[in-house]
Length: 436
Image 1: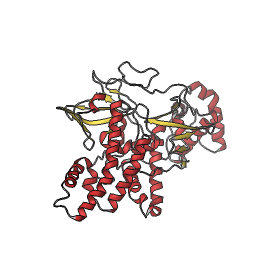
Image 2: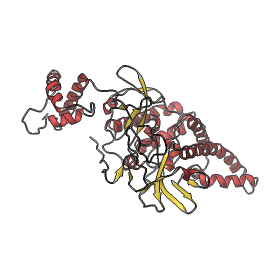
Image 3: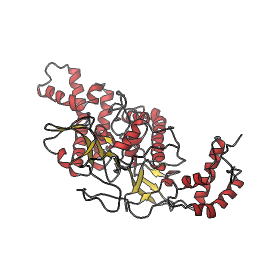
Image 4: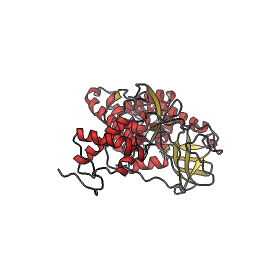
């Protein structure tokens, strides 16, 4: 089991963060840059909507440093366009146009330096256009026009994200004054007129005041197709974005379709695993009901709609939250998922409320327990004792008591284990391994 060390109550503060959507260190538009890569290429224009079935697969034995960093500190500003590309309808429209521009630049061999750093190169190209392309070859003139089709939606998306920050729909924290300072919350006014925001460097300048390593969060959570790019394994994200922006938009789409689907499925499993292990959390959009971790054991999810089918067959739209932990300071925004928001908040907060949904039935718990002992036996691992079994099953029913497990569930677990020929730990025995 993968376990991430939780921040101590005295030093770190959990804040729900939007998901969303990126990798560890591929160049911003699909090319690799020096690791750890903090932003994959822009969010793909084609996010498939097929419902996914099947048991959760653990693709990696431990959380990558990149994923762990985003779970703790939030999403880098440099990855904002990629992560929040499908955050709402307006961004989704620009993102589709942006992906088309990216594909066109790739086909026409536009310099990767331009594509990786539009904030630096687009102003220079604009100056060349204003001077009627003096001293520029005809071939490069055509490249400039192609690059313009790429930059226009990129800058529109950038503006929408800044608007969301200035309105408080997305919040930010950063390292104030120096790059090694603790994180502190950034006020809404910092993203207004007069500030210089550099996405590529995750920096913000207001006069002489600087914020470094700017991180983003959203109280409402990320749609799942954004979250899988925010918290998926970096290599898979880089591959997914490259496929979606170049190959899946060109004439070779059919050739690369199997690889694209395989990569997308791997990223989905990453998210389901993080949700199942409570590294991330999900709530329904209506009612803000918490979806229990056990629901992600074998989920049926519509990725386009960010919806999960419950036991009654009803589709429930949801958003993915994560703990954004930043170091405490006197001016730090203290927000925790609670029924009532703290007084320091200046914007409305969406907090989980009501009873959990997708509560596992007794029969489901019994089968889960037997399956886990079977898996352990086949892999030569220690079988579950009573304490371990209780802790394991509480992932699927948070309020399961030891007495209920012993008196109500264990007799049925033993009977089903006997029927399926699954060994269980004997009472009073020391830890033992099944010998094949």
